[in-house]
Length: 109
Image 1: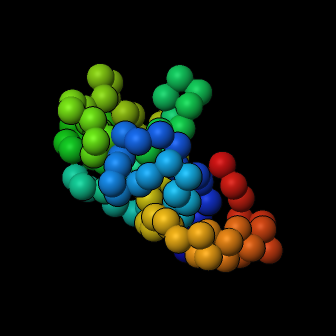
Image 2: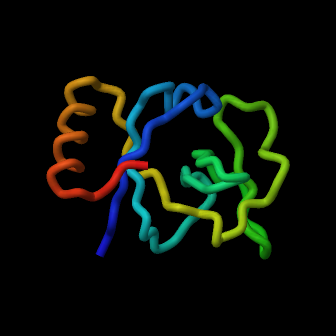
Image 3: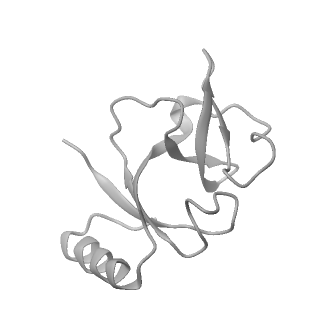
């Protein structure tokens, strides 16, 4: 069974896929991560959402769509919070997502 959290995009590293203040529906129980998936992970106490560009034996090489180079570290599997399933740009849909997550207490990060 899938479990989701609602997160908020911050910054422009994933532009135009994810823009500042977009909402992200994150599946915290992803079954299989592949190259091209956008993951949310923890690095130095911060949540980061970037796209997987390569998978190694040690973890994931990730990159913001708008960044010229990959992140300078390998994301270990135990750092991954989940996979971004949906990106919400529209104000009305953001409001609906807030109500749904608040009602079902799924969680905000």
